[in-house]
Image (cartoon, rainbow, N blue to C red; front, top):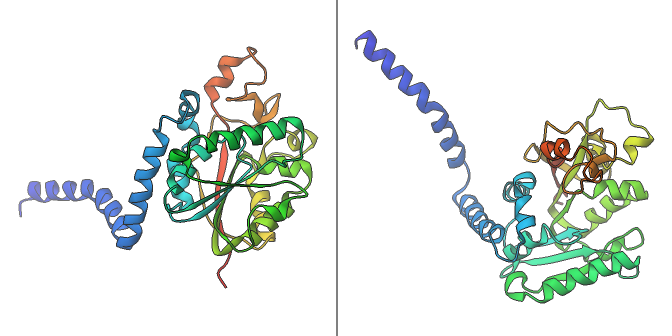
Length: 287
């Protein structure tokens, strides 16, 4: 072979290599797993684009990456999934429709005997889901809180437990380790715990300010989960934001969507976007 032809062939091979590697990786997945993931992805696309979601909710997709996050956790439409502390339902609007026909969605919401605001948020959430069974199916609503940790789901009944940007609340309230123990109890052996949380840099000195900032060190969250018996399966940078320095005047609430400083430095914080977040996948070991 002439030298010029050899060089051309080598260049073509190098260009093709990354594509081959990606395809080879996909082909290593069992056909059934590929099919299940593709089916879930299609259902997620439909839910994310759904008219039941507000324009404001959809505007946050670029920060929250719901499709990528839920596929990373391994969501499937036949699962029993518990969402812990769903608040107004940003993620519920995506997860519940995926589970509507063949799965079970359980929302472990506020204490029904909590503060007036907590009661109203819970009631509004329940009413909104009940008004659209064609979208959400018939989700169950249970309770979650310091004194209600045994109420989230029957022991060993859940395939997956998910919570988004909530661990800092339990930490500040003093029951985060107990919450992880409750999740462990509610999951089936082999069940998955998916955690998304605002991330404090590992080299940051922790003090009274950081404790109230809404940010947590990834190592601390992993340690709590492992202390409860979970095994760390994988971490992801899907929700990373290198622009977030995690040292803002009003903690994480300085950033969108809260923008707690109002118009002060609004452009600066809007440009940063939503927080830098860890995305962690744990498993309850199979027996």
